[in-house]
Image (cartoon, rainbow, N blue to C red; front, side, top):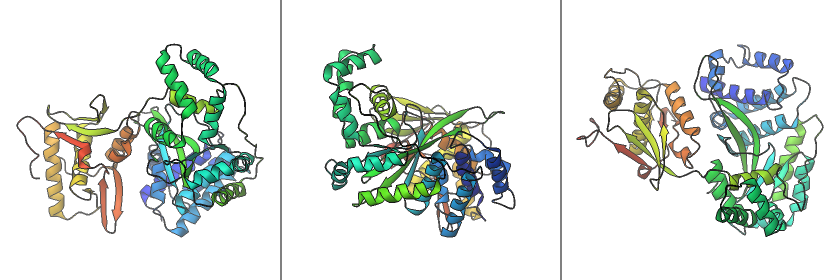
Length: 457
């Protein structure tokens, strides 16, 4: 039997798979109802609601904890769902492939707000952080073969130097005219900067300046990889009667490459093809001596010309005015991003952060010894007393609040290093914690005047 949070995560994946091809079939609904029934995975209505608040990457991180047998059962369920209407189409197959890789091959999944991202599903980009690697040489030497392999399977393989060559081939005068037309308000200096970036972008700079600083996918310390755009998901931010407030997230799969590049690509394509029983439309990248404003050429242009650069920030708890003021401040102190939390959420988040800086994180065991629980509640209520209404709280463990904190941070588009501040639930043996990854130098506490520290610590 899956744990409750695992069933919620599964519901998120099932939902994404049903919507993958943008058509919801009646037979898919029938299979879905059977799957979530008490005879299936026993997923309740409340779990389905919570699943709509969870992003794809978080769901996959939870399902990675499953044992091998349960993982296999999950994948079989997804395959049966994709075939419940008689056909498994490419967008369904690539999502199932993502699940398989994330569960069995230690591939990484990223979910980031889609604002500013104009990248088509099944776009596959080669990414690296160091120029002149052996993997890059292998890609370059076998580029036509690799492009053909992916194109025949319906993927669009992108090698950044090739796209840059296309922009460079336009000539300075033509490219300058187009950029001036596209952004008539831009200064001559800004136009020159855009043209230079389009004609001189390296793969490593793409990873650092665009993927990380503008999209929010952090591959800075990663080995050479393939980054595949899987799909997009709508995540409910805050609940109204009609669940109307949603944020669209783009989901990516990162697969690290070994020395045998072609073998890795063959395995990827073959595994994907085995699931499809529909026609595959080959996707070949256009070659032209004209300015192309579609596909990845448009993605790259928009990111360079329009994409807002995200900033590395520090987290600040400012309780100096006895209000729940929590914000992120850029390291150059030039910009602030307000984190909208109510007093209880702010107090809980501060507890998680402080306990993370002091040790493993905030104790989240189901049964905490009375003396330890009393001390933790005392600390929580001392913090809450600075920003609350004076009432005493008898329980700090609230998954709804932790989820709201996580979602609020994830949808903040200006943060490059948001991931280090997002609370994560970690289990270690009998222990259970909520913690963040940020080191001490990235967190600041501002207390009310005359207070040097919180009591009891």
